[in-house]
Amino acid sequence: MSNDIEGFEELNRKLSQLVTVADNKQLMTALIAGALEISNKAKENAHVLTGTMRRSIHVGDNTDKTPDFQQSDEYSDIGLPPQGRNNAKVKIGSNLRYAYVEEFRGGSHAFLRPAADSEADAARIQVAKALEKLVRSAAQ
Image (cartoon, rainbow, N blue to C red; front, side, top):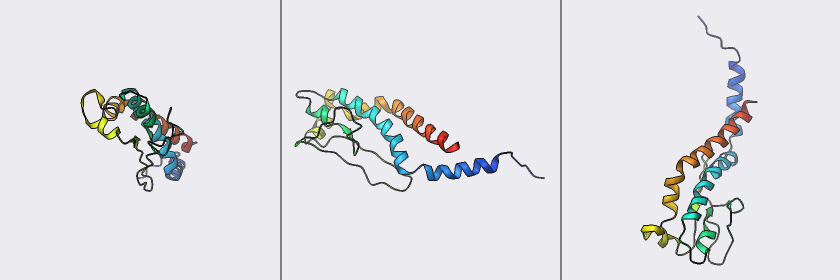
């Protein structure tokens, strides 16, 4: 007895190509889409006196995609964590010297954790949309 599925070989070939197509750059693009949701909310949450904290919050190594990021003598790009093959990671935050104090002093000054909590679903949706687009393009 044999079960031949029409188009299986073609589907299998396309799925194999997906592994090649889904390199870290494309996975990173998907993650950045989600990370921007959190970064933008963190900017909204940041305690504002001069606006420096708000301007310093960004997605690491993607300052060009993070709205309102401005390089300064007080802070810089936080960069990316180590990457692996088909294992993309991003950082969201600030290396402004008092950002850590603001985040962990408690109360209304926390900006990043509340953003991550409130925007987790929106971030997942953005990542899923980007990955769906990747899968669709690989299947064609």
